Image (cartoon, rainbow, N blue to C red; front, side):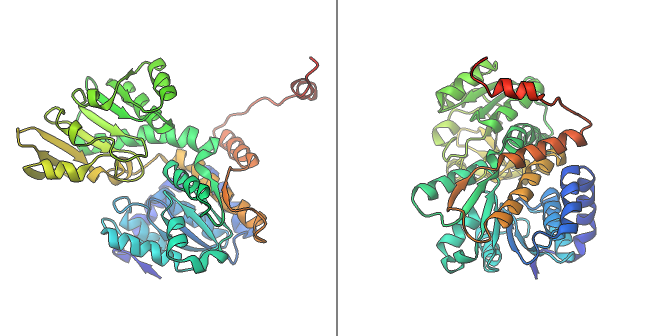
Length: 416
């Protein structure tokens, strides 16, 4: 069962999945184990993550473990149609096409939830929100779920605080092997991959404004500095602002940064980060993009209303000419630039994030089939984080020291 663009695109999608599989040894190791033990036999698993090759390989790993998969994307512009076709070809229920309307996107989410999943793997919280609001009769089926990203975790905590969350959700984003690597190194590289591929412009010598200095913002700023840019950081958190300052970046409000930037990258997870008053101050030719989950950080609708002309200047670049002649360029409609205008995080990085996802789903199946765990947001068990880290070290050809019994006693004693 599928709703995709064209099944004949599958050979290209298979090639992409095979390429990332060769570069994701962690997931390969779990695939080998799951294919023998079949821990997800009889489990219906719903997944909504940006539907490109790395996500597709995670789906195949879970399928090898016996799961009946129901899959869609988590962003209308990040689905790769050939990858979706390859998943449909191998028997996965997939509902996703590139460039769908908002209504079509929601329809695909509903088809996934209508399958009455027992495990939910979400990216941004759309599936969890939908099952609670439109399919409450299916809530008793749910064993639990895993959330991939910061924005989704924020939504889950809001639901938990309101007493609305009805099953346990593992905060995959908060695992050390996820946010310390995916959010920093993955976002840092993939954002600039997307920008450079789309604009074909040099970064060295330019002014880059990074809005938000969480783990993702740290990565974006670090890579911009490495490319030779002068980096400005805007923040609302005084501690993060001080950290950016100590890391060597200029910290100032967006109202001041707006006049300085050649490139703007929003990475806050909040709405209205760049709005009308900022557009009024920007240089002619300024380039705006977003690396937060939803397309609410750059107020593109207001920019369009201010403009006297809109023009597609290159693929994934729309130029908005303002009444005074200045042109402001927006990449990928203000959606996730690293996925809507690129291939997302490198395979080796997503290997770690998706290993956490796979093991989180396994943990729920093994520990909550009897529904003994309380509803709410729960951390990734430490043993999962450690197992992923140790495997990653081994596959990287690295090893570490082990504490002796004397050292363990020393660290555990107060009488030293």
